[in-house]
Each structure stands twice: as structure tokens, then as C-alpha cells.
Image 1: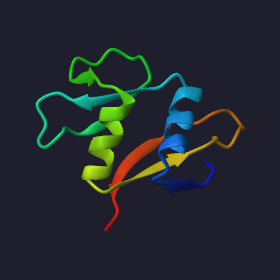
Image 2: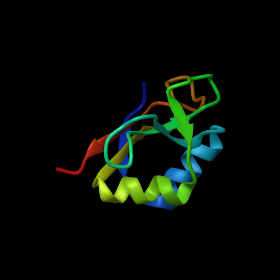
Image 3: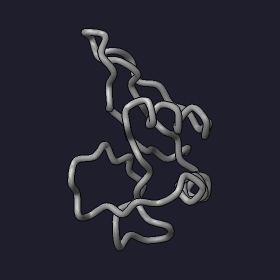
Image 4: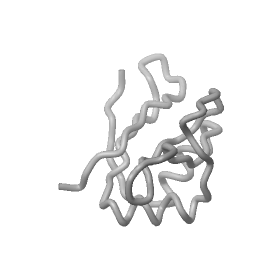
Length: 87
């Protein structure tokens, strides 16, 4: 596994997600704004699609970092990602 990195740059996050056919979503029924997720197309009834604008509004409001991995050990694209507090 290669090293994971963090960012709060909106363009970098969107580019990373779209390069993997990811779309912005949030968990249905969550608290303030919802819990963010990147959806890669696997069916999940707990997620609802949202716009990138709404996604980044929630991201900034909740003061998050985007932890992500670019590639796995064999060089293929990784989809590993997680949202973490900026604390």
C-alpha cells in the first residue's frame, strides 16, 4: 500500500474523485448537513447524491480534511478515502 495524504483543496478532491468515477453523496438522515461520502457506483440505499457545491459547503462547515490514497502497491488507482476532523 502506498502512503495516504490529506488535503482540503476542493479542486484536488473533485479531481481525485472524478478520476475514479466518484460522485459526491451524503448519508441519508444524518445530522447538520449529513455525513459525506464519495460514491463509486455500488448500490447503497443509505446514500443520496448531492452537488459538488453542497458537498464542499458541508466539508468546509464541518472543518474536514480529505484523507486519500492515490495508488495501491501495484500502481493501479486506489479508491481509499476518509473524511477526518481538522483538529
